[in-house]
Amino acid sequence: MISNLIFKNTVLFFLLLIVSCGAQKGQEKNGTIETDEISINTEKSKEIKTGADNYEAYLPLLKNKKAGIVTNQTGILSNKTHLVDYLLEQKIDLKKIFAPEHGFRGTADAGELIKDGKDTKTGLPIISLYGDNKKPKAEQLAGIDILVFDLQDVGARFYTYISSLHYIMEACAENNIELIVLDRPNPNGNIVDGPLLEKEFTSFVGMHPIPTLHGMTIGEYAKMINGEKWLKNGIQCDLKVIPCLNYSHEMSYSLPIKPSPNLPNDQAINLYASICLFEGTNVSSGRGTEKQFQIYGSPYLPKSGFSFTPVPNFGAKDPMHKNILCYGEDLSAISKVTQLELKWLIKAYDTTSDKSKFFNSFFTKLAGTKKLQQQIEAGVSEKDIRKSWEKDLNDFKEMRKKYLIYP
Image (cartoon, rainbow, N blue to C red):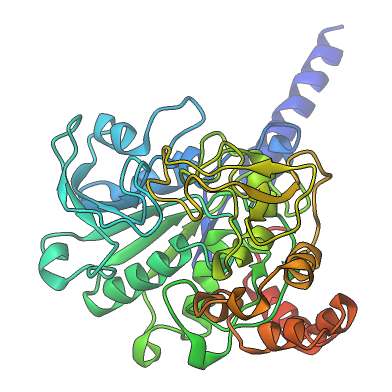
């Protein structure tokens, strides 16, 4: 009996020794802090962890450094603690907050001027990265060793948080500041679709030659910006991406908090890229209602069973067609879309009472090309429009493979 006990203990000891020797701390690969294989395998049955919750991978990088942070209301941990508060609790020497469109608390309208200020809870200065100051100036970064970037993207080219990412990376590269991107899942997962942006139509709602839906997390996208040398003069920043855990692109992900005032729920986020194209037309995308980016309509469309009247509300102080009855379509209960849908845009154009006033100049910026408007005006079918994207999409998907962190 004693010999059997000794044998069992010996076997157990060697098994534990093998496991402990196989486990390694996070390793850096291609600008991404990767957790060890054993850790990933044991985490598979657990919930998705964002980069912000993967704190063991980034807290050591912040110790004894003067840090700044680019974030907003989406920068929260799984326990609902804001990342700013968490870092201060961990005694990280946080100096400044940099806030994108909609502000640090995420309450401003789209396009609204955001002023610099001070966070009432922590007393930290807030620098706005919207309006004339989209890129941090050298004096605003003075005394900062490292920047943390934590914003929730939705996978669309014209969602301006990825434009802010570009300028942050550029400023970090120019001022020799390290950048840590805390990754978050893409709620539109693996969808890669739409026309590629053409260089001559570069703007803050489209900065890189990518399709309307890029199918990447914001961490993967940061790697692409660096790897493709899209920053000014081809410079690259000292980038580290802290990955999500237990995540793959095929997983559905429901955001715990609105990423911006007019994306109130999963349905709006899923339809955003398709319905946002209406922002370049005389058709309302639902701003000024409680179903933003889930309905569309205008006074120039045929009277139908569905109508709404936009009124000023939170996130839309002066909505299109304010106080005017609009006719259109309610998409709030349809099944999840898996591509960029053009059928509603084409239907609205075909049935509007005044085609000459349907499109405005903003449409080309959103589309990233003049071709889409020209195709719709010429009556090209959705099938043929989609076919015209195929080569560009295939080329992009091939390039994208180099920067993917998740399966």
